[in-house]
Length: 214
Image (cartoon, rainbow, N blue to C red; front, side, top):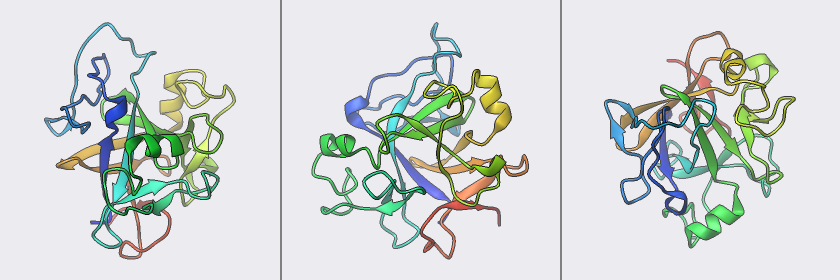
């Protein structure tokens, strides 16, 4: 299905996360732990201003039935994300031989930072080594998502001064809804306040992901 994305936590960065915000915890294989239709919630003294992030790959199989990794191509300098597998094909590392190689390359490695509930920012550091947030630019009306940081630069809020400013803006806020077995619907509400699904259109053959509702 065009709207389903396989979100897999990277094992090298896998530690049990406990926080006041929803987080993904390890199950021993680096995969999300599901519960009650959303990501596992645990509790500790971690505050809202110190969200726990985790690294993951984001995959989609709508083009050929094979999970292909979302990446920023062109050695990290492409403007929009697309799907790709390196030389070894459909394995656990996006076609790299090891997770170490995958993480060092950065193009297919995304950092998810919880904002509360099932909302996250999604960032990637392959362009400059700095985590830049995936957003829908143009005040939410751009067709494809790209990377951006607002004026305060690389902080926990995509360059906004506060988490609330980030949430109110919506452009960098993503909702992950568990469907089945590590597969999620990923939505964004910056275009009109309505959550729209991230999909690969054209029956799965479009190059870049965009938003759509059937």
